[in-house]
Amino acid sequence: MDMQQIVMEIIIQSGEARAYAHEALRKAYDGEFEEADKLIAQANDAIEKAHNVQTSMLQKEASGEKLEFSILFVHSQDHLMTAISEKNLILEIIELRKMLEPVLHSCTTK
Image 1 (cartoon, one colour):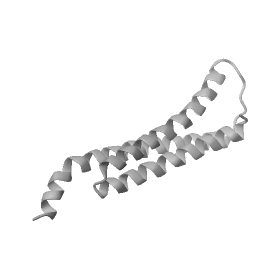
Image 2 (cartoon, helix red, strand yellow; image 1 turned 90 degrees about the vertical axis):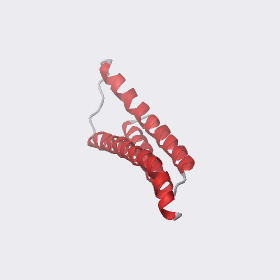
Image 3 (cartoon, helix red, strand yellow; image 1 turned 45 degrees about the horizontal axis):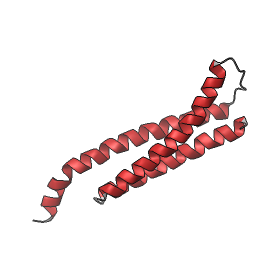
């Protein structure tokens, strides 16, 4: 892959991860926790794909291969970091929703 393809792959996979994570949060707010868990798994898969591309670049540079510097590559790293952070925060919110679900459910059925 050339640098442009690498950058685009990281950005695309990071965007997919964020989209899956945000959809998972919407499902959790609706009490659809199994679906939320599936979407988080899809977010994790997308993050893993982006991370693998990033890691291959880091390994090349660590082994002494000279890589061209690209501000777009740095930008793609921002996308990946943001996707990971958002997914982690959303996961925490989902876990809180799971813990609160019995309380929320009892309040709406009275």
